[in-house]
Image (cartoon, one colour):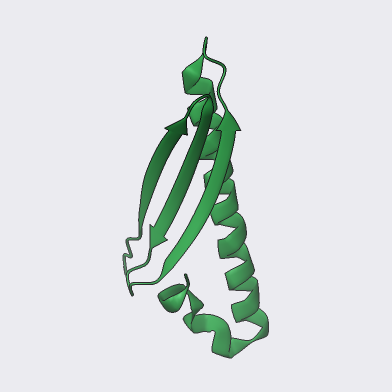
Length: 86
């Protein structure tokens, strides 16, 4: 069985009541895809803003990966995008 491992780094920044998240996927071949998320935090439940921003960043990342895979299916030369995506 062939196993592959990709790493997602998550960066959380808070500015006042706003939370910004950048989720960065680094592929085994050194490619990179970024997902971004933002949420306004309720000061009484600050974790909820962090969670919402994180979910949005990961959803953005998933959307970009889906677009890359669709490109690779319709254009075989686009298969390299995950090793060179930015």
